[in-house]
Amino acid sequence: MPAALSVNLNAVAMLRNRRDLPWPSVTGLGRIALAAGAHGLTVHPRPDQRHIRFSDLPEIRALIDDEFPQAEFNMEGYPNEDFLELCETHQPEQVTLVPDDPAQATSDHGWNFAAHSDLLETSVARLKKGGCRVSLFCDPHADHVTLAAAKATGADRVEFYTGPYGATHDDRAAARRELQKLETSAQIATQIGLGINAGHDLTVANLAPLAEALPDLREVSIGHGLTADALEFGMAATVRRFIAACGS
Ligand SMILES: CC(=O)[C@@H](O)[C@H](O)COP(=O)(O)O
Ligand SMILES: NCC(=O)COP(=O)(O)O
Image 1 (cartoon, rainbow, N blue to C red):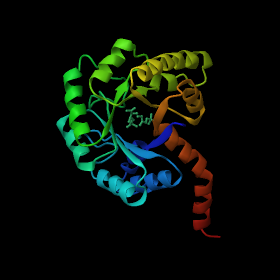
Image 2: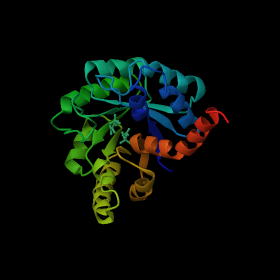
Image 3: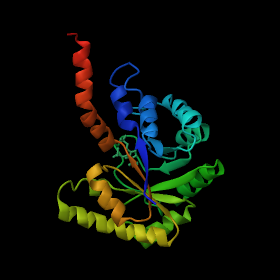
């Protein structure tokens, strides 16, 4: 079965937040993504709301419930009390717990599962009680001990952090080395019964080799590269609309 695509709306929200105006519409672009066949929508609301605002969450929940009931809402974040309460309120189908510090520009590493086992076990149990699937952000070179610690938290899946793979760009030898690490970790995860998600800096170019190397990949969440492509491939048609609006 091909990996499901969850479209991350953080980049759209960040663009929207440049002005005190309602466009680009986070929910509107979420609707376009789901109508085009995306399996779900991902948001990573951070405490400072610099991308997704907490006020976006009920609209996205309603979009899925009212128009795309088969789709999934995936909320990513650090499991502090505020985030856990947001999840309880908006009931995403999946929560991805990420070890982000509020000062971090973006997510750049997976959990140290053993060091944070108490926090993770408690959070996973609380979220699962509310009916969510729980995934934990995980380094791409995770070994058996690390993945066993992830499994021991009670989580359903891990999301492999693909930033280092994405950073290899067109260095094919480096990309192969990063893929090898992901492939090994993914095999261990599958053996011990953890589902596999992946995300960060994925693109059309690097997605196919990843999917081939990780046959059990369940879901990819993609925002930055997908939004960049949406701008690039939508630019010409948009310029034509504006030229037409300038008059003849
Ligand atoms: C968990 C993760 O990998 C992140 O990629 C994140 O959700 C991206 O968010 P930003 O686009 O806000 O950096
Ligand atoms: N979990 C990763 C994600 O949602 C999107 O990451 P990116 O494509 O914006 O790097």
